[in-house]
Length: 127
Image 1 (cartoon, one colour):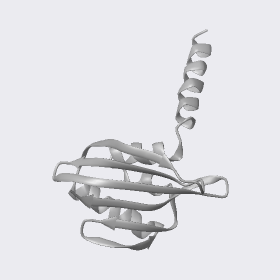
Image 2 (spheres, helix red, strand yellow):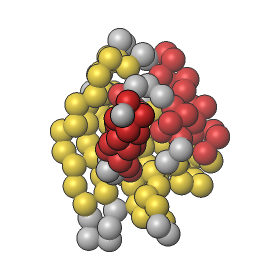
Image 3 (tube, helix red, strand yellow):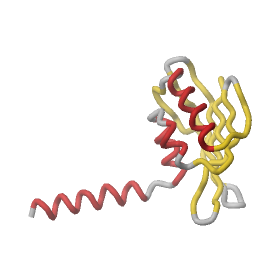
């Protein structure tokens, strides 16, 4: 009987994780300051805007830049301000990222590519 409850609990936890949209997974990764988890959603090229640089980068470069940002600015919270969908099926989120060093306006833009959503643009701008 214990195995049944353990199995049931595991199924519920895994299914609740998969019910999150791709943008929710990115938001949760940003809240955790986890650049590697954010990078899992990156498209082949990512438009990345940071307080000190802005350009289009490949996945590895973008992850490295984001990791350096999170290291220099440890995340203390993230509050979603607005979320929406565009007519072309893309999804975006605007929020406020709180770190130990300051507050940043954050914009996440994702677009469907094949059967998955990919992060095409991430802006983290000083307020």
